[in-house]
Image 1 (cartoon, rainbow, N blue to C red):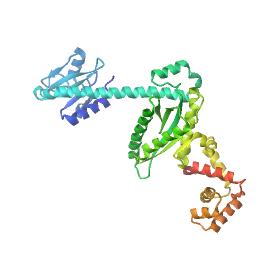
Image 2: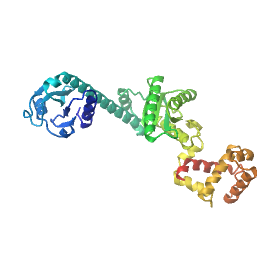
Image 3: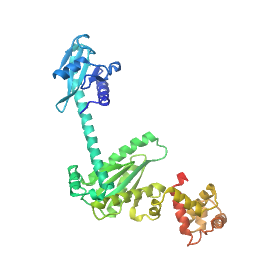
Image 4: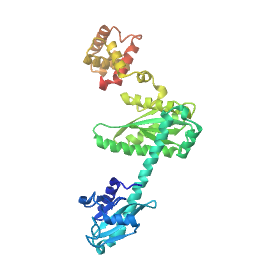
Amino acid sequence: MKLSPQIAENIVREVNAVIPQMINIMDATGVIIASSDLSRVGTLHDGAVQIIKDGLNELVIHSYDEFFGAKPGVNYPIIMQGACVGVLGITGDYADVSNNALIIKRMTELLLLNAYNAEQHLLGENIRNRYIDEWLTGDVKNITADFVERGRLLNIDITIPRRFLNVALYPVPGVSALDAMVEIDHATEEIARYILHINPYNFYFKDGGALVCAVTEHDDEALARQAEQILSLAESRYPLKAAVGIDAPTENYIQARQSYNKAKRACNACMRTHAWSVRFYNDLNMELISGELDDTKKLEYIRRIFRGMSRDEIVEAVMLLENYYDAEGSLDKCAKRLFLHKNTAQYRLKRIAERTGYDPRSIRRAPLYYLAIYFYRDMQERF
C-alpha cells in the first residue's frame, strides 16, 4: 500500500482531534506529506530517511542540528503488510511526548488499517461491478463456463435464476441538492441491506443514479411486495420519493441483460410522468413505442398532430384532451376538473378538431391524440 498525502492528512487531522500534539507523516522517501505544521509539508526529514534506510524501530532526536529537516522528538516506522510505507514523527522533548507517543503510533496504525481496508473494499467493489457490467452489457458470446466460474470467485453465481428491480430515488420538493444526495445515499444503503436480508444470494449494484437489485426468482406478486417494501423504506424514513421498475423474466442467465434492460425501461416509465411508483415491464404499452423514438421524432409527431398551433396552444390542448380522456369522454367531469363551463370545454374540443382535422371525440382519432399526449409528457421539460 502506498501512503498517499490524502490518507496522511486524514490521519493527522483525526489524531489531532484527540491529542493536540505536533506530528508529521513522511512517505517512503522521507518527505513530509502531512503535518500539524503545514509549513513543513514537502520538506525532507533526514531522520525518516535514516529509519527507512537502516530499518530502525524507533529514532529519538534530541537536537535541531542532529538531522537535516528534523526537530527534537520521536519517530517510528509505519509498517503495513510487513513493509515500511512511511514514518510517523512526534515533535517535542522526549520526556514531554513519550507518554503519548505510543498512543499516537497505535492510532496512526489503526487509522491506516481502516484506510487500507476501505481501499481494498472499494477495489473489490470495482472488480465486482466490472464483472456484473460485462455480464449485463457485454457480448453474450463471452458468457462461458470460465466466465461463470470467475463470478463464483467473486461470490456471484450468475446461474441462479434472478429477477431485476431498478430503483430510482429522488427528493421531495424543498430539499436542497446537497441534503438530497446525503439522504439518497442513506436510503440506498438501507435498501441494499434489505435486499441482502431477503436472500444472501441476492445482490445489488449502482447504475448511474439508480440502484439495481438482482433478486432470486419470484413470481410477480412477491416482487410487487418487495417493491412496496422498498418504497416504504425510502419514503417513510427519508424526504424522498421512489420509483421501481420490474423486469419480465427471461429463460436463463445468458439472457439476463434483457431482464435488466426491461427493468430500466419500466423504471423510466415511472419517472417520466410520476403516475406510478411501481411498474412492471409487461404493463407498459405506449412506453414501448416511446422508448424506440428520439426526441426529434416525438416533437415532429406532436407538431404534425397539432399542426398550425403555437406552443401555448399545444400545451392548452394537451391539458384539455388529457383530462377529457381521463374522464372517459365525459364533458361534465372534464369541465369540472378544469374549472370550465361544459359548453366552453365542448367549444374547445370542436376548435381542436377544426384546427387539426382530427376530431378528438372520435374513437378512430383518439389514439392519435393519446400518442401525442404521451410524447408531450415524455419530453415536456424540453418541449
